[in-house]
Image (cartoon, rainbow, N blue to C red; front, side, top):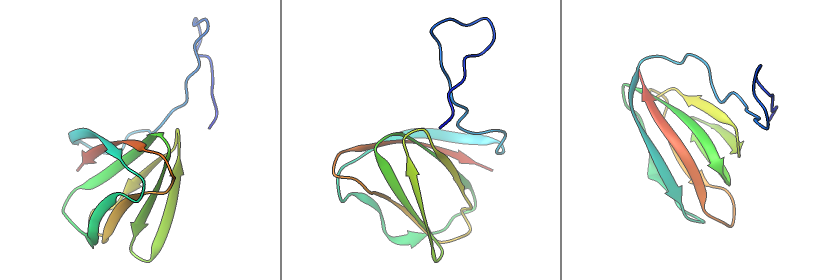
Length: 101
């Protein structure tokens, strides 16, 4: 994660989580306990998910691929590919999930 101080800011560091990713449908925050996640069987739908990890680590199973996200990282999941999301650490993981078209 690369932190920058924007122009004309003091004591302020930021890291870009994502750029333009489509039209936002909705957003949610998830608190995922150790060994938690889901759905148990991967699912599909017509919209995509933009996941951003706020705390902890997440494991995204998408098709035959596994993507690991740590604090400050984001990943856009193509909703048409079977997927599920799981906590990968021994503490609670906090994630923002934004549904986009």
